Image 1 (spheres, rainbow, N blue to C red):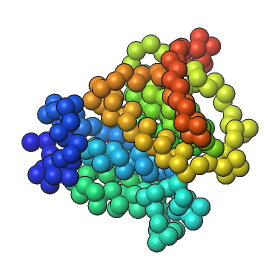
Image 2 (image 1 turned 45 degrees about the vertical axis):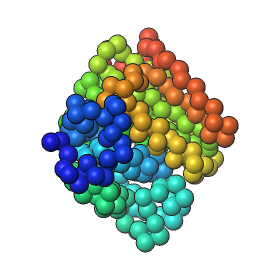
Image 3 (image 1 turned 120 degrees about the horizontal axis):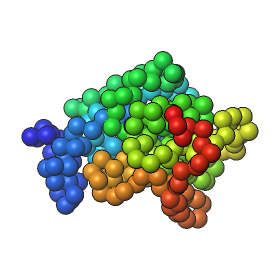
Image 4 (image 1 turned 90 degrees about the vertical axis):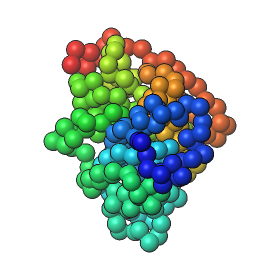
Length: 247
C-alpha cells in the first residue's frame, strides 16, 4: 500500500478520480519535488501539492516572514512574523498530512547547494530572483532535471516546464538576458494577491500533470492575465543563439 489508511481518508475524494489509479498513486507517493522560494506563488503551490498527495518536498528560502507577505503568502499569519518561512511552511503542511517528508533549508539557494537538487524529480523555481533562476536553469540543463519556472507580477503570470532530456530548450532560450537590474519587481510595480495564488495553482497542476503523465507540459509557456482571465499557451523552441546550447 503506497499510502496509509489515514492518507486514503484525507485524499478520498481525489483518489476516486479515474487517473488516480494504483500506478499513479505510487508515482505520487515516491515523487520528490524541490521548491526554491516560498513566496506568494509557492505557498499555494506547496499546499496543493500536499493536498494532491505529494509527500516528499524540499524547500529553500532564507527569508523571514514580514507583514507585507501576508496578503499573498497564505501559509503565514501575523503570529508567524519574524520566523523563517521554510520552518513555518513545514509546520503548517504537516498538519494537512503528517506523513509528509519535508526538508526545509532556511537559506537562499547558492551554487554550493546545487547538488542537493540532484535527487529531485522536478525543481520548481518561484524565487523572483533572476540570477538564482539562471543558476537553477543551467544546473538542471546540465543534469537533465525537469525544471519549472513560475513567475507572477502585477496581473501577469509566466509558467514553463523545461524537460531537459530531449532537444535543447531552456529558460535562457526564452530569456537570454543575464542582468535583471532593469526588470520590474513586485515591490516597485505591485502584484495582485489573486494573481500570485493562480500562479501557484497552475504550477501545481502542471506538476501533477507531469508526474502522472496526464498531459505533455514540456516547453509550453503559459501566459495568464488575471485581470481579464485570458490564457495563452506558446510552444517554445530552441534558440540557436542560446549560450547554453553546448553546455
